[in-house]
Every structure is written in C-alpha cells, then in structure tokens.
Amino acid sequence: MTSDVARFLGFAFANADVLIEVDARGLVGFATGALQHVLGISDADLIGQPIDRVVAAGDRGLVRRLLRTAGPNRRLEPRVVALTGGMQATLSGYRLGRSPNVQLTLTRMESREAGVTQPARDAETGLLDPEAFQAQLGERFGVDVGKAPPKLTLIKIPDFGEVKSRLGPELTLRLLGEVGALLRMHAADDTLATRLGEDRFGLVHGSDVSADTLADEIATTGAGLSPDGRALESEKLTLDMSAPGLSREDAGRVLMFTVKSFAEETANFDISTMHDAVKLLVDQTVTRVTSLRSTLSDDRLKLQFQPIVSLATRGLHHYEALARFPNGAPGPTIAFAEQIGMVHDVDLLVCEKTLETLAADPAVQIAVNMSAASLSSDIFVVAFQRLVARDPALRSRLLVEVTESTGLTDLPRAARILEDLRRAGHRICLDDFGAGAASFPYIQALPVDFVKIDGSYVRRLGGSPRDDAILRAMVGLCREIRVQVIAEMVETQDQAAQLNAWGFELAQGYHFGRPADRPAYKPPSLFAPPSPARRSLAEGRT
Image (cartoon, rainbow, N blue to C red; front, side, top):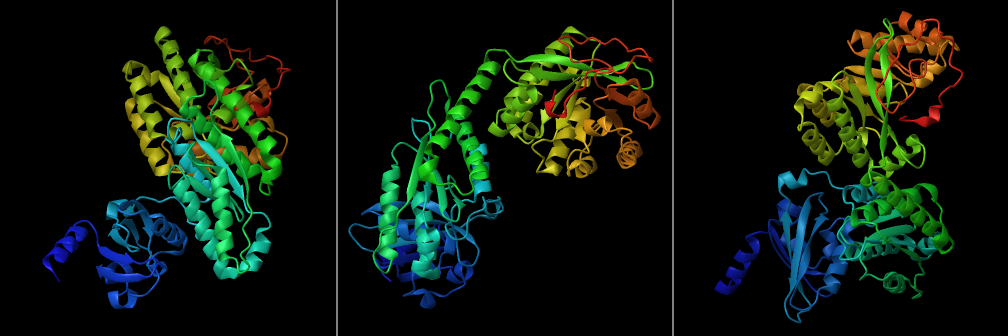
C-alpha cells in the first residue's frame, strides 16, 4: 500500500467504520473496515456482490438511486439507512471526477442516536407508514421547504394488482423500492414521504418539485423493470397549502389535518376523481384555521364559569372555566383545535384569562381544562409554567383538569409533569372518568386529587341496576385511593341526594348553576324542583 493510499484510508476511517467502492453496475469492487462487526461478512465474501447485500430491503432502492444520481466530484448527502444485520448507520459517499465508481462510507450510529425511537417505515418502500407520517407532520408544523408554504402531492398507481401479476414478486419489490426512493429524495425531508396504502403514496415538498416529473420518473422506472417495456401509469394530485393570511405554521397544521382526514375517510380513493373533494377539504380547513387563529389573536375567546359544590353542605368548592367561541359550539371547536394542533394555544389563553380572574377575586378557586395533547407538549408545559410563575401565589387557587379526548401515550412522562404541578401548588383533576378504556390505567398511573365521573352515568342514574352498581363501584374505588369524586351533569335534587348517599363529595350541573360570565354562586334550595332543561352529552368541554 502506498503512503498516499494509506493516508486516504486513514482520512476515510477517521469518522467511518466501513469503506466500500461500488461500480456502475452496483457491484462492490473494494471493501474494508469493520465489515464483520457491522455487516457480519468478510471483505472476500462481499467483493463482486451487489450493494443490495449490504442494505436492508426498505433502503435498497434509495441507495441505488443515490448511486445513479451522484454527479462528478459530488458528495452524497448523508442518509441514515438500515443494514441487513439490523444495525443503523449513516451512509455517505463521493464520486471522484468522471469515474463510474462511487466510494461509500458507513458509520455506525452512536448508542444514544440508535436508542432514539425512529419513525415506523414500510418494509417494502422505506417510506413512513401513515401514522408515523401524520405524527411527523404534527411535530413539524411549518416544515421548511423554501420560501413558499409546503405542497402535498398524492400519487396512486392504478390497477396495481395487474401490475404485480405482470411483474412478479421480485420485480414488484424492486419497483416499490424505486418508487419509495424517488419520493424520499424529492420530499422536503426523508421523513416527509409516506405509503398511504398498497398503491397510494404521498410526499411533502417545495415548489421546486413537479408532480409531472415524479409521474414521468415512475413511468420510466416501470418501463425499465417490465419485461414488455410498458411504462407505469400513475395518477397524481398536488395541493398547495398557501392561503392569504395563513402562516407557515398554520399551513403545516392544515397539511396534517388534510392528510389525516384523507387517509381515514377515503381508504379506496380514486385520485383522478377526488381533486374537487380534496380541494374543498383543504379550503374548508384553511377557513376554520384562519377563523380560530383570528379568534385567539383578536381576543374574542371568552370565559364562563360553572360552580362545583359540596353535596353535603351545598357550599361552593371551586369553579370550572369554560371556553366560549364567537362562532360554533365549544365542544366541536375544541375537538377541531385538538385535531389541528392548536389546542395548546387555546389552553394557554384560557389559563391566562383565568389567572386574571383569580388575581381580581381572591375568594375563588378555578379549574382550567388541559388537553392531553397540551400535556404531551414540552413547549406547552414550559409556557404554562412561565405563565403561572408571574404570580406564584395564584397556583394554589388554579386547579388543572386533564381531559383525555386525544389520549395520553406516555403515562410515566405525564405523571412526572403532573407531580411537578402538584409540588408547585396546583391540584389535579381527571376529567370524564369512566368514559374511555384508558380511565383506569390513568387513575393508576397519574397523581390526581379529584376524579370527575363522566356525566353519562349520572344521566342514567336509577335507570339500570347495572349502571348504578358501576357508579357505586367507581366512587368506592376513588374513596379507597383517597381521591375526591366529582359528579357532573347533576340536574335534579333527587340526583344530588342519591349521589351524596353513595359517597360522592362534589357535584357540578345545572341544578347548582349554569355557566355564567362571572364567578357567582347561589346555593339552590334543598326543595328546588327538577330543572326542565337538560344538557346534551354532545356539548363536550362546556
């Protein structure tokens, strides 16, 4: 080995574990380094083998495309790829001059990097699966794709069953790998391309990417793999997320909501006939996002307060702050805010307004709703802590009511956050207990002071021995673990008396007071007639 070659190898291995040279046919002509440890193979066994021998199936198409598109004296953009042995590595490379060969380096990911949960990918294409794709969009509102807002292109390969039959299993797998590689390379980021179904794909990209170009490349790829040279047809639809007055962040939210709705509601969609429907969905979502953003920024969100009282004494315990919007019922608006990723903004504004009320009236205690989605956001938690730190004395009078409509996916983390809030002086309430399958795991894992029993049980009180037994069992469980119980939707004196007899300590409902613009409570007469108005279960967080 000459001294120059030794120097070059030393330079390459300063940051890499394996060095591989691949020729124009994709065959390995030279390999050295920690091959046995990283790949489980010796250099002698690898020489003359296709590069596919090194890379896991889902990333083979991507590596082949990277090799084909590497220009003279160009460095390949580093990519994280899965290797055949299951290890993850960073792939880099360089093509020197006009040489047909490309030098590749593989660097094992550090243990701290490898330990980070990677988004779930489709094994055949290397693209993110739909849920992982939606999660990425949710984490990266306003993803940077250049100066313009992002675009979403949806692609479908029609008659995919016939295509698979014509190509056979091996060539079909090769085709899917090539399609996945094409979309990953043209997406704004490797995690912004997805396989939505067997024959359906999507990617987020900037204005420099053309759907027609993607379709042409898919056609060419299909012709190159098909025994009869037949081009592969594809249907496509591109959606522009730009809209007057829509920020990049909110454009990303519209994008996420559109993908989620599209994946859930149009499982067998035909892109060629769905253009108008999808455009309508985008337009409606933009309108709703713009309206909600305007409500928040123009201070048109208002609060009402509903009392929560002691069943034994009818004395006031605290109020619940309820968000009121100028357009639309609060329940559906909150649900949309959760779906679109804006509930953090709503919850934070409600907290800010509630703190103002607490500061003005030192005699009251108020509970604010905190969505599970907000609790799951580090950004929201920090913003909430900073907000209440402005006047720490108010913490003991600001209760936090956790709503689980979107579900808590990381209970240990949520428990740590709630414990921190309790140590700071807040008391914690778990809303809608008994309404979902996660209620009992929640009360087992989360440190809470109160549990609010879902109002559907109260509405059915006395109507079924089984329902009544379940209600008594829930209050018994809560008392056993020393958690106070709140009954909601209490509308009659008879309901209040029965709940008190069963051990319920607190109650909320029209019998004790409707939501009002200011905290104000007048104890009802013990002999007050039943209220003629009944609240609908569909109201949600009212």
